[in-house]
Length: 145
Image (tube, rainbow, N blue to C red; front, side, top):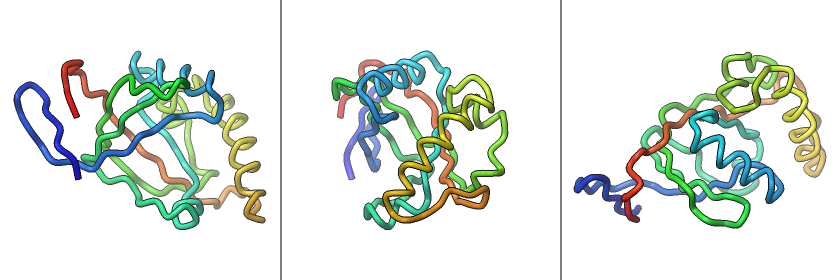
């Protein structure tokens, strides 16, 4: 647990450092989308949480968003978390992820998730569970951790 100060108010929170994407340029691009308000959600493979011994995020958690240079460029607060099968992702969520369209989201994520799961001997299907997480940008640039 850590302390966060926003506008003179101190709160206790769980913090995670997050860099979206797998390459330096992709991480910087996606971090900029968060700053612009064009990326307000993300998805991840539910199967990888126990393998990586990671806790699921909870509503209220604060994420420190990093760019490709590993600089924290902003903070977001988790507003919703749900498990959704890969085949049930819709265009609203795809756009919230910052991918512009469902077709673009599907092409990017089908390729990425297939590659990740293959390393563990698992095949991506429409029933593969994803953890879908929505977040909101914490607008106060003077916050300190």
